[in-house]
Length: 152
View (cartoon, rainbow, N blue to C red):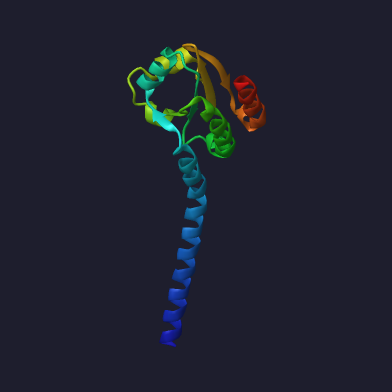
């Protein structure tokens, strides 16, 4: 009888641990996927972003954060756009959670017009040429077609 109680106790503990770890893995899977998809992008801070704007090169910057539900949901589509943008060289990631601690963050984001994430910003000739919203990222093929047309 005592062995049966011990067996039942350990069985319940094992099942609870499996359920707990299953929930933990499911909750972190999206976040882990986001981290993997942004690894190929060069992470920049506010000063580096300002420097990129001043250059006369065409560049693409993804503005987002791991704590943003839309950023998490759209990261695969964002990644496809940024992969197309690599034709112009390095592509960048401006993590607003990370950059929030930068001096002048709010002033800079207001000046640049970053009011929501995710956003993809196209820089050209020292200016922000275009910003792509989450709605546009959701229909990423239009953006990739736009990038393809611009290279021809």
